[in-house]
Length: 257
Image (tube, rainbow, N blue to C red):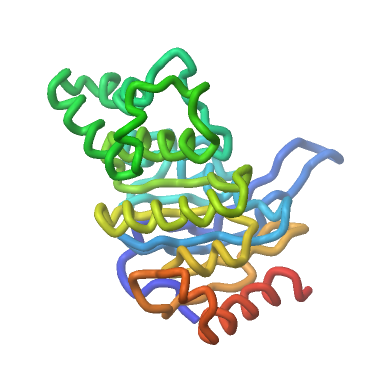
């Protein structure tokens, strides 16, 4: 099944990645070709050590392929760019800054003036449901609130692409489900392109327009699946036969080897 039917936003062309040298060389990614369409929400799922994060970091410009190229909008990725926001599992907030100041940080670096900076930060703080906590320091926030702040900060600079590396992996199940819905609501409002790394099959199915399944030793794309579940996604969908069927297909692609 083809992953995309439009011009790709992100394109991996014969990409490989090796770490180390000589007898200590580790093949993290074997030759990989992959296309991610504009305004899609693509989840990448697979076992630990299959290269999911490495694949994402190549698109971020934080890891250089050993061979092959990664292109965004047709241009070769050779460095990080504000057009590609990154959210990691670790919250990486500045502890001495309030929620408001954390979200404004990237805008300030970009030279956005104070009034516009506050206006745009307010918009994304509201979007992720933190309006009542804008003056709080990170130490007073729950893990879920910290991650909401990190997402708002990444989106405030208006990136075309948001790259997310297991952003909800350290959170409890209820918070994780809530943030899934927050992310979908924000994505539906902005329609940017999202590449979302996860090891959770249910999360991969619930969020995605398309799913990429990776296998390990060496890391590679094992399967590509279109998600035809209806929008908007709701909790009821999780209990539908269609969800169960797709979840089982993904689970077997990940664990069935």
